[in-house]
Image (cartoon, protein in one colour):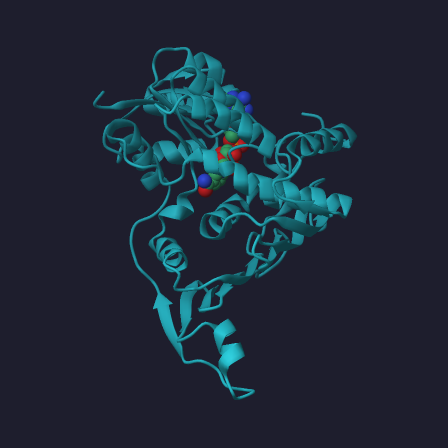
Amino acid sequence: MDEVRLGVIGCGGMGRSHMGQFAAIPRLKFTAASDSFAANLKLVTDEYGVQGFETGEELLDSGLVDAVLIATPHYFHPQYSKAALQRGIHALTEKPVSVTAKAAAEVNAVAEAHPELKYAVMFQQRTLPRWKRVKQIIESGQLGELQRMLWVGTNWFRTQAYYDSGSWRATWAGEGGGVLLNQCPHDLDMLYWLLGSPSRIHAHVNLGKFHDIEVEDDVTAYWQYPNGASGVFIATTGELPGSGHWEICGDRGKLSMSEGKIEFIELSISSRTFIKQSQSGFAKPEQTRILIDPQGEAGHKLMTNNFINAILDDEPLVAPAVQGVHSIEIANAMIMSGIQQTTVDIPMDRDAYDTFLKDLIEKSGVKL
Ligand SMILES: NC(=O)c1ccc[n+]([C@@H]2O[C@H](COP(=O)([O-])OP(=O)(O)OC[C@H]3O[C@@H](n4cnc5c(N)ncnc54)[C@H](O)[C@@H]3O)[C@@H](O)[C@H]2O)c1
């Protein structure tokens, strides 16, 4: 195979945005599209001259595609990923990989039974050079052992009109959550990618605090990592001007981002060692401040390009979708903890979360 025949399932905002970049991706041949909403499908078949299908299954059975990009609402992601892999078709899914960790794990089982197929997720933040540098600092041991994490993601401001723009949005039945499922998957993946999963979560979750929606639009959670390190995660779509601020502290220094600038303050010696050894009550080890600002291209196009290269050249995937189960599990744990006012251990009881979500859907006034 010297080119990949790609189909797209879901021709809404994101699906069409991806299509706009296909011409710049070598060895990608856009051949088919599917959307359950005829007007959106027509926009695409008219513009690109590709074959259109009403359902994703028809597209997958058409013989026109070697790979598929899934850009439907979240609930359909695992269904179509699984359907593709079971037919021998590579799958690149939009984030999140699913709405529940249980559904993600079910697709992972199919993916693991098909190691010859590529299964990737659109976590394009991983391609940003500065994030790669942050990961390198953590993995090299330069930051030392994790002590504390603070993540303030309150710059996701959305109006009611945004939530009213699609009947699936911000409903338990259509989206399975609010800010944690729609805006935060990139943040949660980044935290998983850099630090691994926390082992315990206690969250405060407000449902429809700022908007007329039934799901969460305001979250403050305490996380505990397996080594005892603490984390605080804050997210909302109702704050202005909002903050995009974080700190990751180890015993050898601190990585932080404020006003878009990332810096690393490196200690000359472990603070834990210094606490024990110093003879002075107020002494501090020497600190070196390093600005982290590597430039370079990043984004969706790079991810689709990587997916094509993975299929044709076996290039390692930037974001293997089997890893997506972790960020969705963290989101599930925060929602369950916040609504039930309990502490949730991770790995969590995934069957219990499924039952809990079904119950929320049943009690909800919104039916799709
Ligand atoms: N990676 C990113 O940065 C990023 C950014 C925005 C959105 N997204 C993700 O992309 C996905 C789609 O978001 P959007 O903003 O494009 O939504 P959207 O509502 O604009 O588009 C969704 C499209 O899917 C179609 N659809 C619904 N059910 C379908 C089905 N069963 N089969 C085929 N088509 C179906 C709808 O008719 C619609 O055209 C979401 O999961 C979202 O999280 C990712």
